[in-house]
Length: 136
Image (cartoon, rainbow, N blue to C red; front, side):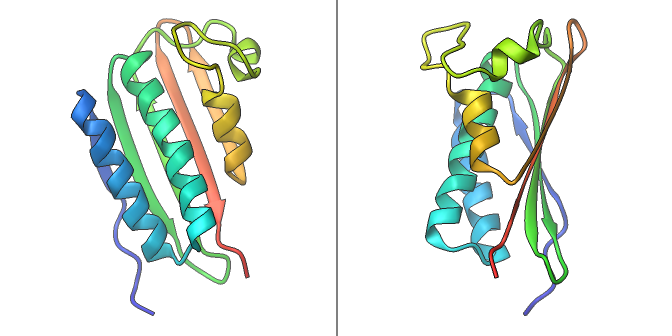
């Protein structure tokens, strides 16, 4: 098996960047050895988080990182310098939305991934780190 690629950093500054991020995450999931169902989970979570980064954070970055070893995986880090999340508990609850969406973004991404961390400070931005591990 070839060595995993170096972390990729993708700017999320425009609507077109959401598609770029999606394609990069799908390619990374295939490279990491995920099956079709897990590829779909990872790409769906990434799409939600990329959209949040763009819409609510005013843009930011996505870092895609392969996690090698006996327990291979994929880590995605979304960062922005936007207004932050005033009430993180509410934002993680299903049905919470500040726009026209369904309110499944953060909570949905958390359910689709194996690990989920969010750090947000009002006025200082948000950082969401999600990880999915391959299945044996």
